[in-house]
Length: 84
Image 1 (cartoon, rainbow, N blue to C red):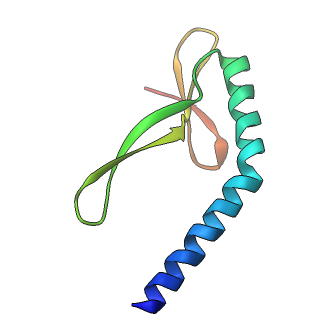
Image 2 (cartoon, helix red, strand yellow; image 1 turned 180 degrees about the vertical axis):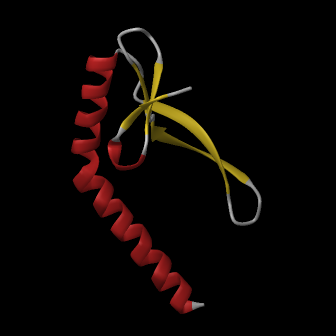
């Protein structure tokens, strides 16, 4: 039980540190997407947990529109492809 509490404490501490250090970068990326694409850079998504419950979270969206208004999808390695 003490080992799980220690692991959880380390996880929370490392996660909080990473968010603190990377937070300004994430805000700048979101602002750049919003200014260039004109759309909200975050989307709300639902994911299944290990026990089958759903939980909501925010993530950066991975789609964009080209000049003609067609949806482009960012694939592996950041390559843009037409959504058919």
